[in-house]
Length: 550
Image (cartoon, rainbow, N blue to C red; front, side, top):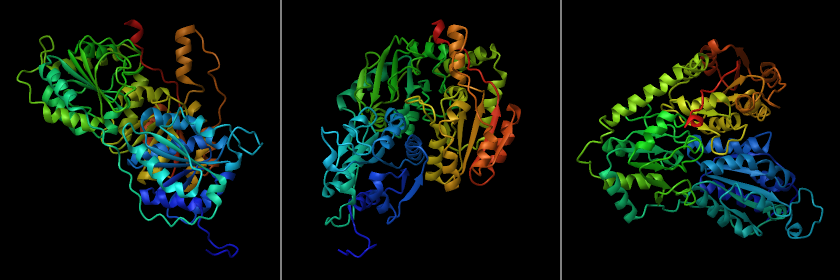
């Protein structure tokens, strides 16, 4: 081993990088930090692409967006203490949504770990404990020889259903110390098998085969389990109406005669699902939004499939099947013969009741003064190419999109899992890094300020992201909620920048348009190279809630 000044010396950081490369990593997101310098020095000797964010939370969102767009495992590097803690809200979104990621955080030197407060920079009592609520597991590596196996195990856990982020931390001196461990040449991480139990499949097939009014709720687990083909086959075999949750959007063809689309927050859709005598729920907890804010009261029997055992029966009794959605639906579809009788929805076919329900939902919207909002969303949909991936922040336009957006062949991504602000733009940056194709991010002015610094990331890496900022001068959805509940809004109004000038100051082209011009502005922006911004100053309203009248 050479000891000449400036000579490359393999250390713990190299073992981290070599293992990630052997596992198939291509891209790393994050921000350097003092205790992580050995990690970043090793990165310079690798083939991995590093995407430098400006805020750790946004780096986590970017790794999440990369994973959702590509199906590959996102890798996030974090510094100790403040850097690690700042990323936690981004990791909560990945954890809640089941996004596999490997997080490598640095740690203070080993001698600083334990009960004593030695006053080391960035020292925490137990850093990995801070990540316990937002990651599947947490590991502390205390010697270099343990690095390859620990990262390989973490990667395996991340991609095993239920998928999610995992946390690995390595002390500064372990990253920096020279190692005798040979270079990592290969590493293999395969997801643990998660099939359904055979007796549960048999019982579910009995229920579905005898059902007179079967229906399906397709949640985010349907997409994560790549169960779309089996879902389509099963739904057509059963003649069962299918509704997709916001997380499941795109799992079932939008214009299919059995598609209830994604109107889970409308009482007419809730009524239909409640009338099902057997309801198949895939990859959903029947949580707040999917249950129309816990007003959903199904009268029939429920079959609930989820890879996360804590989800099963969490909101009501069901035949719970703990399994990967793809494996479970494939097993159900293979075991279920074509039922001898066609479903009877009280004198109507499934296709007829589906069409009638959608017509009633449309009529309800027609009775509200929502022409601006409906045209605005339709114009965005018309501008966005069918295969373009879109990323939506927690803003009124996104709340509309949860229900009305047809994902077509492009994937729909939103922060609906944890519901934090600031996901849309950094998530889109990660998607653009992974696909090298243009993506769209949609934010409000409030959520845009969470990630405005990432304009520098977009410019530095020349990422093809079009950012649509809908500026209504405040936290629009909170304003609407408070006015409806209390007759006035408090602390929802925001002073803000001129977003066009601000983007231009980063070297990012930007334009302002009114709502009528949003389609043209987006189409022209999509035709450009690199990052750009479209700003629309308007006040959108959400459609009237129906759960309050139930």
